[in-house]
Length: 107
Length: 120
Image 1 (cartoon, rainbow over the protein chains, first blue to last red):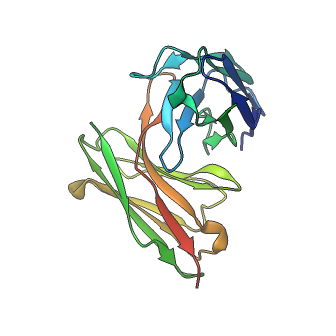
Image 2 (image 1 turned 90 degrees about the vertical axis):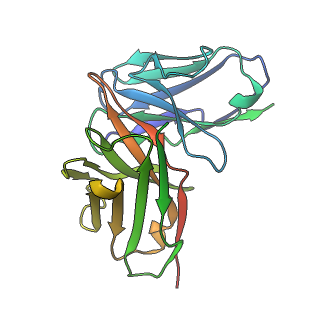
């Protein structure tokens, strides 16, 4: 299985901050990397697919970059509704695997 | 708007079989893949497996010996059976649609999730 390493596991930030989350994979996955947001008690929501494509309806303050083994999710200006946990997921090979998540908390 | 809804027992005894059904509404199941994913506090999100609308399956090797996923197109449903469960199978179980693009694959629609506890 492809291992997914997210960092940090948690971070504290304020509204308006720029937030960056990284995801590293154990092997080259080209751009088969997706990002999800999850709020407590809810299912994950797709934000970014193919490393850098914004899912329909997702605000443009979210962006993704990277290819190969190193990827980044950036929130350009954190909004109150963005406090949540973020997961990366690879779809390069089965079984699809997820990172352990990054919890974005209020500073 | 595609909607998925999981249903099934919330409590299963050790060594028995966990059975869940996902009902899909708002779109045809044809030409998509349909997946089960589970989430635990310790191990996070894990793919269990998926099934195509024609019935071909792909299971996570770590669970393959215990998992069966099936589809009933006439009812717009797909199902999960996990046999010989232990406390380690206690999790929130999600069903999700797999969307395959030309150069990507995502879980684009998810059910709300259902907590299944394995306990006597």
